[in-house]
Amino acid sequence: AQSVTQLDSQVPVFEEAPVELRCNYSSSVSVYLFWYVQYPNQGLQLLLKYLSGSTLVKGINGFEAEFNKSQTSFHLRKPSVHISDTAEYFCAVSGTSYNTDKLIFGTGTRLQVFP
Amino acid sequence: KAGVTQTPRYLIKTRGQQVTLSCSPISGHRSVSWYQQTPGQGLQFLFEYFSETQRNKGNFPGRFSGRQFSNSRSEMNVSTLELGDSALYLCASSRDGSNQPQHFGDGTRLSIL
Image (tube, rainbow over all chains, first blue to last red; front, side, top):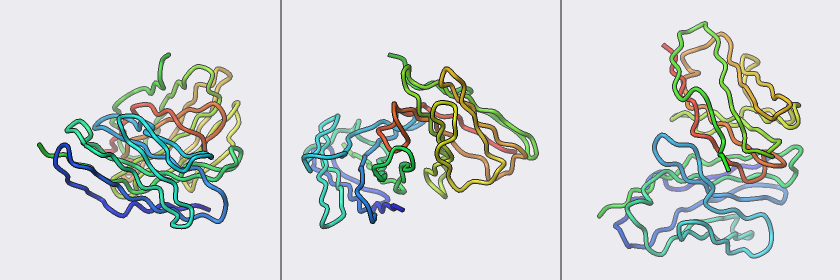
C-alpha cells in the first residue's frame, strides 16, 4: 500500500516569489506520482505527472516537480507565482497496476499568494 | 472535447434518505472513479468502475454503491444517509484505470440535514 504526506498545510507567498510545495510518499513498489490543483467550487485539475523516464517533470502553468526516489519525494516548484495560483494543491501516489491500484491523495497544501 | 459532467451540482437531503449521483465521463474513457472529499478526511477513494464492472473499492460501508452503464456513464448511490455523509463527491474518468491521470468533474455537493 502507498501513502503520501504533504508537509505544509498552508504556504503563504508574495507574488513573483518562488514557491516549493513539499510531498513525500511511502511505497514498497514502483509508483506513479501526480500533482493536482483545486480552485474553489471546482474539481481537481492535473498539473503534472511522473509515470516513468525523466525525473524532472514539467507541467502546466509553469509548475515543475522532481521525482527523488532516494528521498521518496516529489516536491512541486514554481519560480515566480501569480495571484491566480492561489488554490489548494494535492499530491497523489499510486502503484503501477491499473487493475488493482488507485490514487492515494495527500491532505493538501493551501497556497495563498499575496500582492 | 467535453469534460466530465456531474449532476446535480448541489443536493440537500435529510438523514435516512437515499441519494443517487450521476457522472458522465469524457468520451472514450472506460474507467470512472468516485471520491469523497471532506475537510476532516480529505480525498478518499470510494470505488472504480471499468467496462460496467467494479474493479477497485475503498474502505466505505455497503451503504455506498455504484454502477456503470454500457456508455460508461456511472451512478453512485448512498442509502440511509447519515450526517457524516455530507461532502463533495467527485467523479473522475480515465482511459485505463484509477491509477492513471484522472480527469475530474466539478463534483456534487451533498448536504445532510
